[in-house]
Length: 155
Image 1 (spheres, rainbow, N blue to C red):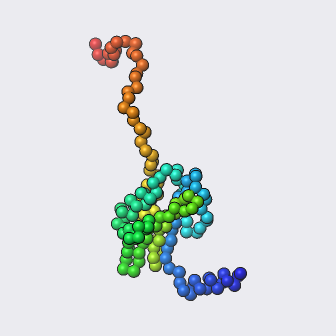
Image 2: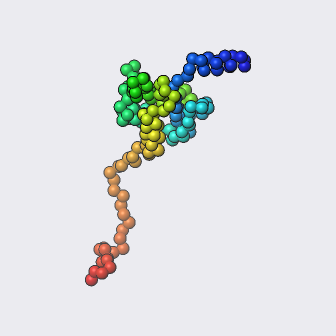
Image 3: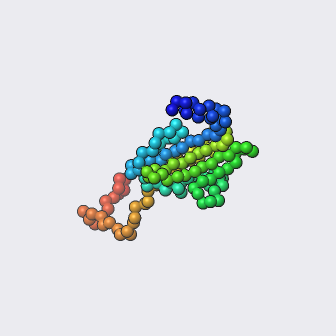
């Protein structure tokens, strides 16, 4: 078993391992717990957030190109050789995974940092529907006088 791990480690060093991956795991009270990962950050959410709409809006704000297959994936070429990809997945345990990947650089791009910042800000904003209004007027308690008393300074 140790030999396999050593061989795998040597292969990674020899072949190279490029890219930077950051994952945001959005966990609600009703979802399962995601497995631990060195590249992942767990963010607690209420569960009422429209996560696909938030991620799509952030992708649009950053001028990312949507994947033509219709998958929840957007990308942009950050330099001549590098690219940034934003992906969204709904996991079987009920939590969302947002992947921010820079390729082939090992550093984070400005787009990656801005995407995370915008997603976190959108998740902090209240995302609740307004209370329904019925159009009825609530009656006030009857006044003890028929007309209002004069204020201070009036005669």
